[in-house]
Length: 317
Image 1: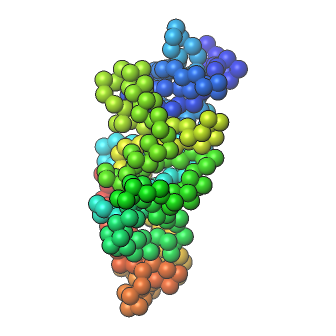
Image 2: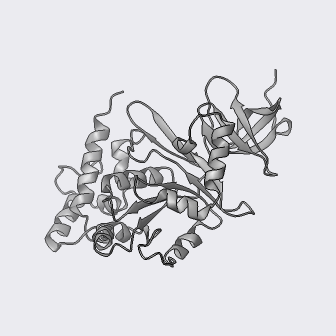
Image 3: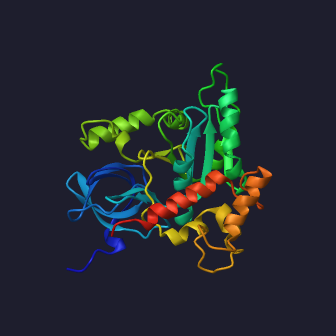
């Protein structure tokens, strides 16, 4: 039998998934459950698909080529977050203290997938903790990353003017939102989409998951015109990068990349070789007590690089 053609199929967008079941939205806003043809689902949230009706549900016959795919991979499994993204928003907070290694891993994954990352630091109303956290992010601002202050739940209950720049950056884009526990991710999603819980409950019921689908990835439209979307996804606590070769790391870390061309040897690992421009930049930053900049690399960033290089070099195949 000839494979289905685009004219034979209905177009749709995957907006949620749970196991082998996915929720597909049609161009006119109708939503229905679809199942992949075959035993294993190859679709992720954000995929554009071609599907065919089957009783009151549908069968996914085709996945259109993706612009990108954001995912993580450890020794056991691959976790795909979403496809066809414009940007990834990494939401962290002044309290509890965020993991710089976790932040760096997400940024590296975004760089590898050619997706623009944004960093937002929540709880700017906590003056001293925020000042410490903001200083820790100086290296990332020096590398050219967009870093925004937020106060999603200010202690005085005031309207938060700091959210306006973030709203502007989200408008007209499809944004994956990641954040560890306590970062305020649920607060942000509920502010952007007041009926998010209603949709989540509807998906949970439709997919018969028996529990809230906060354990799965979900796409929400922010505006009625469906031009601005945010994708909420769990799974930020562990972020494996086993899909990346250790020799790729310098190109995916802007501060390391800025000095890698200064090394004596073209295949320098930046760990022990003489004449290494990266190690020289780390030494210079230490002597001048500065963080990552065009002239230096902070000790914490270099440790993240060396630890990741070691981790990825010891993978089991």
